Image (cartoon, rainbow, N blue to C red):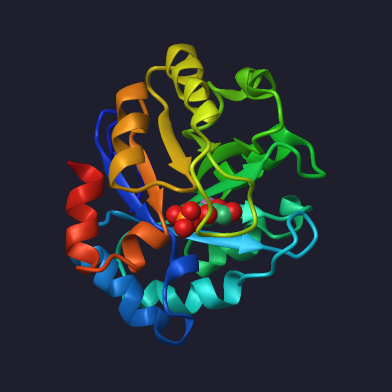
Length: 220
Ligand SMILES: O=C(CO)[C@H](O)[C@H](O)COP(=O)(O)O
Ligand SMILES: [Co+2]
């Protein structure tokens, strides 16, 4: 699945498997797609760029056979340039990395594109949004973090919402993804501001009435 199959006006839910049952990841991923999610958000953490360790290309490669959803990797790692080929081979369709990573930003964007994947850039809440502006015409998606990266289940940072408007004005054709504390209430706020890709971990996989209810609440 390619991101070009989706329009930036289209509302897309990207469930973060960080909140799924790690002992049952294959049915969690296939169930999310069956519930209507068109992306699967894969939070890769190296214990260095962020204080947490999650999973890597090995796990993603095993999951690939269980879903036709767009595999949307969010790399929270210090040296993304070392691993792009591995994420491509694992079956990722899209790779987002952090502008604070220790790499040449344009070189990593080009590397991602060279494997036929779409590229995304993101930034921590404390990083100036202006740093992203030189790249908005070079990538397919911007990810606005609405929590400090590293852990699921945190509260949505309302003061990040104005970043969505800034990016939407800078490039109306970009996909704008929001990640962190997205639920029934906050999804409306970010959609109204111009975001179209909604990452949800806790609100999706731990919804009391299941994934289909979560999908409906996040996209309506
Ligand atoms: O990138 C992330 C954390 O760094 C996760 O994608 C995010 O936190 C999703 O979890 P939740 O919806 O529970 O906030
Ligand atoms: Co994420």
